[in-house]
Structure formats: C-alpha cells, structure tokens
Image (cartoon, rainbow, N blue to C red; front, side):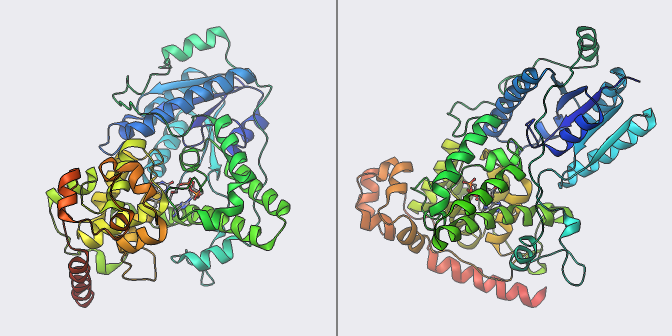
Length: 478
Ligand code: FAD
C-alpha cells in the first residue's frame, strides 16, 4: 500500500482552513484531492445553472491551488458510491478522507461509500465537522434534545468554544506521471465546463469563484460594511451584506476563518454601537448553523412542513399565479423586483427573499415547496438547509414560535425601499413612475397600462384573510 491519501472534496472547495484536508496532511506527505461530479445531483430538476457555473469556476481555482502546492485535484464524473472506492483501489491509496455533511442524501451516500471502502480494505476518515463551528452533538437543550427554536440555540451556541482556522495545505507530494495515467484509466477527467454539463448561464457571476476571491470579499466586508450591518442589511438597494453565501455553501471559505474575522472586527471596534453590528452578523452565521443542525437532527424537514398544522394544509393550485410570481409579473413592484433580481443575477437580498416567500404562501396561498424548489433552480447560493429553513420560516410551517407571519408588500417597501430605488433597478418599466405610487403599490391603472406593467394579480387584504381562515380551520383539524 502506498502513502497516498485521497481527499474527497464536496462542499469544501479550498485548501485553506479545511479540517479534513489538514488531518490528511498530518497522516501523510502525499495528499491528492478528488471531486466527483455526481449525476444523482446534477440530473435533478432543481439545479441552478448559475450555481453550477460558480462551482465549476471554484473547481478550476482549486485545481490551480493544488498545482501551486505540488499536488493535483482529480475530477470524476460518475456516481461517487462506485467511483470513489474504485479510484482509491486503482491508485492503491492508503486512505480516503472527507468532511462530514448534514444533508440526508450526503449521509446516505457516505454510508454506502464507507461500506465499499471497508470491503476493499481501504481506510477512511469522515468524522471531521468542517462546515459548521459547533457540531450538532455539542448543541442540546437542558433535556438533551436538539433545539427547535433559534433564540435558545443562539444563547447556547455563542457560549461554545470555536476552533481556530487550521493550517493551509502546503509542501505536499502529488502523483507521479505514471500514477496520473492510472488515475485517468480509473476515470479522472479534464474539468468540464458548465455548458459541457448542460448548464447555460450567460449572465455575469455576481461573485468571483475561488478561495482567494472569497477571502478578499470577507476582508472587504469585515473592514467596513460589518460595522454598519445592523442598519444597512435590510435595504435591498444598499450593498450592506457580505454576499458570502455562495462561498459558504460550497465551502470556498472556511467557517473558522470567517468567525476569526468577526472576532478581530470585534477587537478593533471602538464603540458598543459598532460591536452590536458585528454581533448581529455573527447571529446570521448562527442562523446558518441552526438550520444545518436542524437538517441533521430532523432530515424529514427536506420533505415538507415541520409543524402538524401545515402537514396537510389546503394550499391552492394556480399555475398562472405561480408563473406570474416566478417571472416577476404579480403587479406588486417589490415582489417583481426581487424575483427579477434572482432570475437575472442568481442572487436575491434576504429582505426580499422573506417578502416573496410570504407573498407566495400568504397572498397566493401556494405550497411553499414549489417556491423552495424554484429558488433552488435559480440561486447561486441555493442550499438545502438554509433554503428549507427560510421557506419554512416564511410559510410559518417550521421551527418557529410565531404562527402567522404575513408581510405586507407595501409597508415592507415603505420601510426598506422608501425611494423605490431597488424597484427601479430591477423593474425597468417602472423607472419613470412616481415614488409615491411605487412604495404604496397604488399605481393607477392608466399608468400601469401606459408603461406595460400588470395589474395586481390578487388583493393582499382579501388574501391574507383567506390565509388566516384556512390556518384557523386547519389548526382545529390537525
Ligand atoms: P449576510 O447577511 O452577509 O449573512 C452572512 C451569512 O450568514 C450568509 O452568507 C449565510 O451563509 C448566513 N445567513 C444569513 N442569513 C441567513 C438565514 N436567514 N438563514 C441561513 N443562513 C443565513 N441562504 C443560503 O445561503 N442559501 C439559500 O438557499 C437560502 N435560501 C433562503 C430562502 C428564503 C425564503 C429565505 C428567507 C432565506 C434564505 N437564505 C438562504 C438565507 C439568506 O437570505 C441568505 O443567506 C443571505 O441573503 C445571503 O446573503 P449574504 O451572504 O450577503 O448574507
């Protein structure tokens, strides 16, 4: 058996601050990366072309990083359940290492890979929690149950020690030319483009791929914007959030590195006011972690509502309304701006994600699972745990004490886009319409007609009553 350890990258596309990769390097000087383009994932009907384009860009950067430190990243395009053990066997690898994941599909897949490796007598190490700061085992309630409410989770989570970033891979030995030939015979390929894989994204990427770009974005954000985060984060026309979600989804940046940056920002903060802003951003990282723990502890979340009242909720089927929502043609300017932002750029501001999710479920009375899937088909940062958590929060079907949360599109606009700047940016036909009309949503019919903007497809007041009525009825029967 050789010294070779294969490190299987999945949602950790970096060589810095990668716990499993650092553990592999401690075990052997010879570490080679492998990434498997998994048809079980790529052939699903909820994969966003923008996300695959970003991922391929990150893989290209990761190959460059491996080359810089003297090794390689191998690319496979096959079912990992067979392909990873087969590659390890063909390369006569000593072991395969990887980082643990919270998603039900990943866990199932990993169990099968483990069995195949065991059968072949190949060692493995998979118990590194890399994508989160504290493991689900560390976070339990007083009665030793997983948390189902965010605030007590946060209060406990913030007291738990957080690890420092681990060492970047360096001075590593890679494959010889002869070994590279063996890897090719075992399926290693040249990295395909997103188009080769059938995913066409013609727009620009709002986030540059790769760990260097993610690190730069983190530094830029924690130098200034984080100090005003609490005030600025709610305004979709302002660049007030980190836009690190795609990098965090694919692990292009280590979460320990991100956490350390917040600690440094806190140390450098000169006022309590600044510190409050930084802590607010830390709370967002805790939301991310809360939803990942939730998915790990309650994998059934991936299939539908958490709360009984919503398990058989009488959602409406209305294809026309759903299409209008998807395409940003509801006649509600803030909803349409947000949907068009996502369709055109692959990203949507958090405030707007909450507004459009509330609109789909509470105004159109459409099943949140349809919205959740549409988001996955369009977002650069689409992530099962965060997306599912966000949708269940908005639909009131999830782990959340507030039963009926309904956003009024007009008052949301008045608070968070008071000049209609965001609306004008994304709904071009409304650029010349008076701000007063935009923020109240009360655009006269004649004007709508003149600029080619639709009438509202439903009446918010009537629809929210409808929703409440159905909710009350459902509470009785459930
Ligand atoms: P920042 O405000 O800078 O926050 C920093 C990081 O914290 C984010 O990058 C993200 O990783 C995490 N975070 C922030 N807010 C949340 C939150 N509410 N839940 C979980 N993590 C959070 N986020 C995704 O990463 N992927 C999704 O698919 C996704 N779908 C969502 C769907 C709905 C209906 C809602 C309401 C929210 C969703 N979110 C999702 C959460 C949030 O909207 C995005 O993480 C955020 O807008 C990303 O922008 P940012 O990186 O600038 O965030």
